Length: 154
Length: 306
Image (cartoon, rainbow over the protein chains, first blue to last red):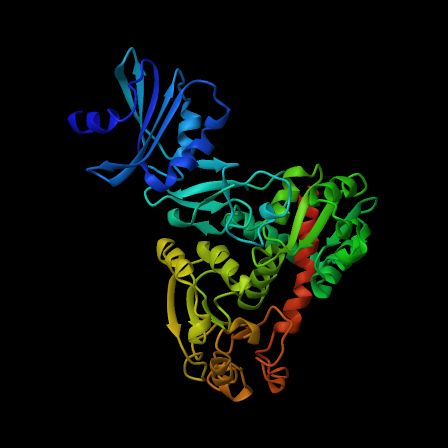
């Protein structure tokens, strides 16, 4: 707790809400988009390029008065599997949620195969997570694999 | 079967019994290829990408069983050239037909069509992805000529990197304890992911870099594919290897008596013309087997097989 307290001092403490921690610095705005934070009216603090002992550099997002469902959280696993969600109630961390990789990923990731039907029809993409440890996705339509580093969001 | 309804999108969801059951029905159709089992049925053949051979084979199958065919053989003449989505085309055609057989240049098109269509879909090829009726006719040809699918020595020759038929064959044969031999130029080697698939499924394989009399002497099946010029990034390499993977009649001197040579066709020059008269050559009969296999697949999709 000691080490994260320092970086959290950079932004206001949260009474109630969610603190999303350990976001890779270059994924901060992907998290904003995936959780639809641009459509939320409560105060949001976004920190990027903060120093982290574990990661070197990390991002943090604090969202007041907002909690996320398992389904919303699992979306984040495709871009950053090590993200931690701290659930805050009355200034206290009451729960630390780690993200579980789902079995399938719908409507979030773009298929990397330019000849895949999903890139030509107005339809949802669906991927099966074929390797949870390495974050490998397989397109249910064209059967091509996407590896973690190559994942692009829609 | 993981297929949507009775659609046939890939062979992935079929097990050993499913495959043998379908091939058994193909044999019945070979014994009796003409009937009225499809009387009153309308089958649509939607070929968004031209393919004369596959389309004629499917349409002949429908006609020989007394059904009627509607469709197109060139998407340029259809409303998809006006920007209609695949979904809309499929919804429209499914109002008219009992079954849709489609080929599309985009990968995954058939699976998507099967999700939106109220009538079954048979995939007649979706880009470089799947072509299940071709694999079934390859299996039928092996079963018919060898009397079994189990424990065969199968030699795959040519373009093993991009060749869709050779990849589907690996998957479909995993139930039958085959030994594969991969013979290809270095640039067109069997991709690592398929070799990994073989290892994970206990499929034995060996790799070779030359096609000669000695290498193929132990083959039950020699499956030839075309080495295409456009697949090479280095055209010097193409010029160097293009003649090394041509099957010539004299290479068959030490062949086992039961050896059969298969090829998905069209052939260009990878099998010399003098092989055609050799009793080991089987590629034209193989294409004919496609008719019986497709009769079985069509009737299965319409739930007409007992």
